Image 1 (cartoon, rainbow, N blue to C red):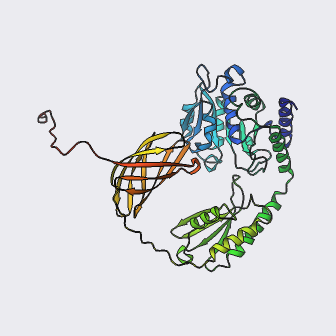
Image 2: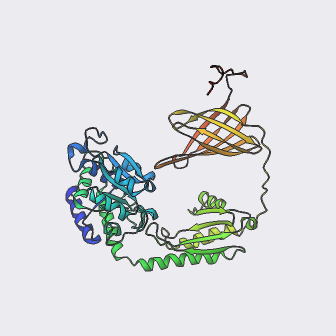
Image 3: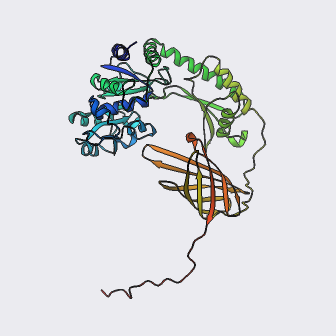
Length: 456
């Protein structure tokens, strides 16, 4: 099967199914963002395309985004080598557009909704006057036919294949302007260039098309009713535990559109928090992925049914009932006294999988509680935590536009050395060894040269 002929046939069929001008399948939504960016930078010119990510000599090298749209997924856009320009108002958007502007990236959420100061309609009006394409990232949204974002003026809209549409997990679908999407397909594998590493196989292409065809014939109301029945089954079971209340909320937007069951209780009555329940279900079989939250008015977990299958509701109900119905003794809030004091400056050696880095801690300790700052490779951020016995736990968060890394330090204090592990969330783990750093200068009087101040 010839890839280009297959892609053209799929593009034509996607257009028929979705009422969009054209469509292509990518190896995931993020890959689709990358391909559209490459298309906007190169404009379908293969000599420009193969220079990416070296953009020297190219005219289109900047992508504008409302600041609310910056997120971890815009790495796909940055992979092309463009400069991201953040704006906060229509006036800033007007001023930011220039001959180097390749496109405008908008993450579909409440801030881009109709009526907001920098809504998609406002962005499109400014962009179209300057002939700048607008890419909308609607990854987790339901597919609307015709596409609501294209109706609002977007040039191209990107969807995830493996979320609401229930297609292949490693596929995405792009809908919109045919010429721009043909340039995006030109940038995609099997063609050589910046998208060769984002190969979408024939299996994913046909699977994604089949998923879109199924989407147009599925009984979405019946699916919704089934989800509600599963949540009712879970709620009926857990409410047999004294003190449990439940509530079902129904989101109004298109993103992650599914009813959600909230199970609430007083942690001082059941002697367990929502976070502890979530940790229990995540680590022990049968494993269940749930959300959790504790606030002043109680603790809760939430269940989303959209990825569940027949029979799962009983498993979830029995598992949660088993945990929540257990009799527990109140846990003591008293902490063991800290065996040492970590106040001061620390030189920290970070041991990653194949490299090492030098970080620093500047800490202050008040009893069991520790606060201060963490100087990492490229930033300095607040750090806070606790010391109990010889164990020290600290947490800091690195933040940058479109990026975030949380460091969870867990170590043991021995004299002037603190060593242990670092949990990095999605980036897995590292080790660390911190040694107390002494200041070189001693105490001495300071004489400021220059004599008395000048008379006025």
